[in-house]
Image (tube, rainbow, N blue to C red; front, side, top):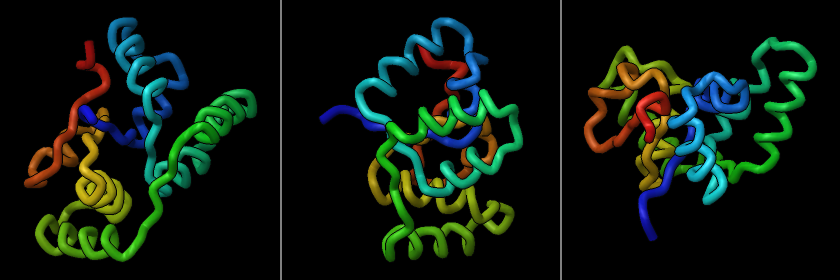
Length: 130
């Protein structure tokens, strides 16, 4: 199996909201159609976003198609390790990073700076996809 991906909250919001450049959106279309993975944290953050009703329904419909990765003991332990090493890493970001790492997934996030120092995590910006 080839490279597999997991989406961060900002990627979901930008993709569903048609904010990505055309080349990036087309690349995301291919990735999402092949396999749509998110962390439970992404679902919580995305649906906790205060948008217009039609926008929220679009996000909810999109997320209903996703395979959701929950926090199990392996993800929890990796999250703990990450929080100890990277003290400024927010809990949500640590869980998302740990989920990606434990499941051998590449994280797609606009906020690559939040994740760039994490050893063993591959993170790419959706705006740079072609």
